[in-house]
Image 1 (cartoon, rainbow, N blue to C red):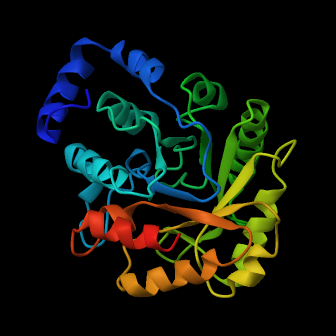
Image 2: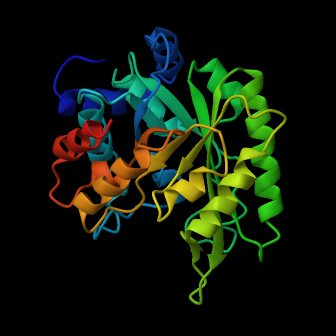
Length: 293
């Protein structure tokens, strides 16, 4: 379904979803896979909605409009230098049905149980893709979020789940992308990630040791101060995440550029910062990020 305007393709998508559920499996079988993942990655992240994280910048429900989200992702995927996408099964399958994933690296988001703002947010159980489903769908790997809260016993369950997922993906010879943070609950009860160099160094060290092998493990980390210290905690390849829509895009680009000079940093996996830039120029934001690679 790659022909026609986006509006026409989206209208057809709704009809297919309702009357032809088998079309998803057919799209999986039909997709042209990339021969080999590139040595440096530029991935668009679109896995936020399944965790209830719908805000982007000053728009509290920006990512709740699925048509708008998919159109933005398709624009990003069409830009030169963009290698692929990260998403939950619903988003990946929408993009498959739209014919947007041929020749792209596709990473499946795995643990979405820790809903944003929930009392159980740290208990981030695996409720999306598992390793077998990622392999069966011909995806290139799986991504998991690991927030380590030393004051929340539910952290142990998430640690165990991530370790099992790393091992299972390695069994299929697929990338396991781990996004680690040291986290805590603030005075308002919300979970916040501690972005000091010391906390991120500890998070990288913990994530690197998960699973029965680290052979296929990659890390997904923010660009923080003293990145040399943070990345010295592991020999594993890493990509930089984008996080919230930055108030100063130029400063964010400068921070990414500096971190990309480190030997283990191999690319970018960015979502809201590129899909919902303050000027709404998705193509421009994506091109600026690609230029760093």
